[in-house]
Length: 262
Image (cartoon, helix red, strand yellow):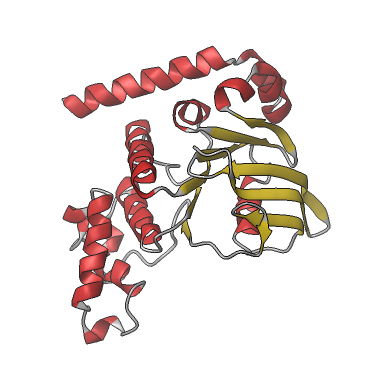
């Protein structure tokens, strides 16, 4: 992870329907690292991502790559879920090729686009899913396809909104390990919203704790102490400390490894 910022939020404020959702958020996302945004429901985590993606109005600034306002960066986005007609007769490879070729699918798949789509499927260990119907995929399989779709943008910044939510813990662990491998190989910066604090402690290199404003930021092992957790999630989280989170994270890793080796 570089100390140079890939993204900087400067006094970012979002008001929706007369309510302040984010209040003067100032934080940074280090280049080539994995930054996690954590906080309770309604804390503004997804809102911060939408502001970053330019989907909602805000005041303040979002600066990319070393503080130059407005610099275009290649971004990939993996949503929490994709809403679509599960009866739609479209295969995984057709779905991926749609984002690569200009011709409609009924005119056939370009060989070059098919090859590129298969390459990205292979990178997420999903090559065996190519001819499956999109509506027949499990939650974990669908998230890998959405990741492959995002990787087609050759992103410098990969943004994920609770992409592993609804996946069992073993699937979440494997998904995080896959992301870690891809990030090291492709040198993108990863910014993700997560609800799993133990997984954040195990995989993130930087964390932004959010509750309408920034309550803590930095290395997870230093920031996620009882005081910050209490101010972010409420007094009941004050009894949770870094050791207990690391213990849960290690237990998850071990159980995942046992299941993987069976």
